[in-house]
Image (cartoon, rainbow, N blue to C red; front, side, top):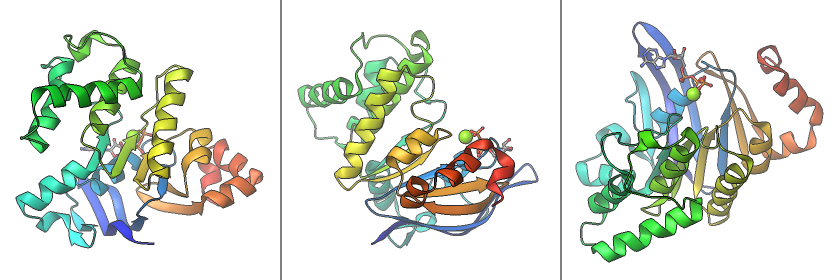
Length: 247
Ligand SMILES: Nc1ncnc2c1ncn2[C@@H]1O[C@H](COP(=O)(O)OP(=O)(O)OP(=O)(O)O)[C@@H](O)[C@H]1O
Ligand SMILES: [Mg+2]
């Protein structure tokens, strides 16, 4: 299976603190990988490094064998178009209404697209994600859960092939969460690559082919979906908390 994103001895430091310590990992095309582990372990930071949103202070990140740091503008735009990113804090543009939040990625990546075509695509992703309300309001006028739904819909607009998702169902009601999990499952069945952070072992068991447990900025353990499915004892130990990660 092809590696699509590869981290080679990647480190990341900020404010004299080493947050990621020489992580090497290959994400395989068409698979789903969960980044799990306790709070503050470095999951979100690793996800942002893999997505090219943070620049490593050591090591390299490759997309289809190409060093992300050395991509030219066109290659970088293409990587961005192929990547969907949903941040832990949703990160919608606060000073733009929802219509503008959704329209901008299409304007940037598909400048030839007509306004009716943009609106058609916007309504498709909103219907899939289950948002039915007004678009002429700003993100601050939405609940946290609604912001997540819009952020997810926005991430899917440009038909990405790699999904980087950080706790994308947190603070959603069960029905909305179910919907956003099923959408990701469907994307995986369509051979998209999914890299996601979750604390929820039900989601991990449902989606992940590989599980990477991050502890203190390092990979403490990697597991396969089958290992998780077949070893209830292991799952219980992982669910129990930090001590259990040190298997
Ligand atoms: N830009 C930054 N400057 C300084 N410290 C940072 C920065 N970004 C993250 N950290 C620190 O790095 C550590 C890892 O943060 P990260 O957000 O990656 O953890 P996480 O595993 O995603 O945690 P959670 O499960 O709570 O979301 C934390 O201790 C955090 O305070
Ligand atoms: Mg996090």
